[in-house]
Image 1 (cartoon, rainbow, N blue to C red):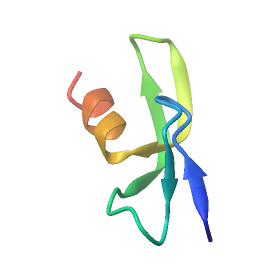
Image 2 (cartoon, rainbow, N blue to C red; image 1 turned 60 degrees about the vertical axis):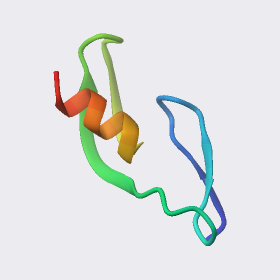
Image 3 (cartoon, helix red, strand yellow; image 1 turned 180 degrees about the vertical axis):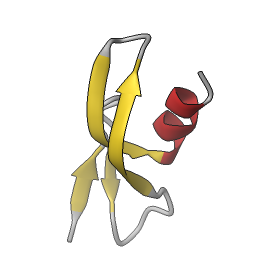
Image 4 (cartoon, rainbow, N blue to C red; image 1 turned 90 degrees about the vertical axis):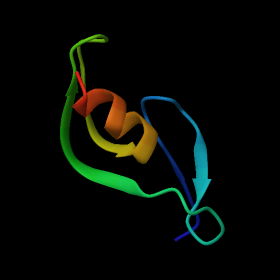
Length: 50
């Protein structure tokens, strides 16, 4: 593993150095009307709190 990018915010995370956790699953952002298969923790919280 190395770098992984959150498709919603487009931030790139290094899996070895960053503490940010990626969430895998099926997530729907009603604000953007888009579906995602993975999200960073910040985007996950934003989407799930709607």
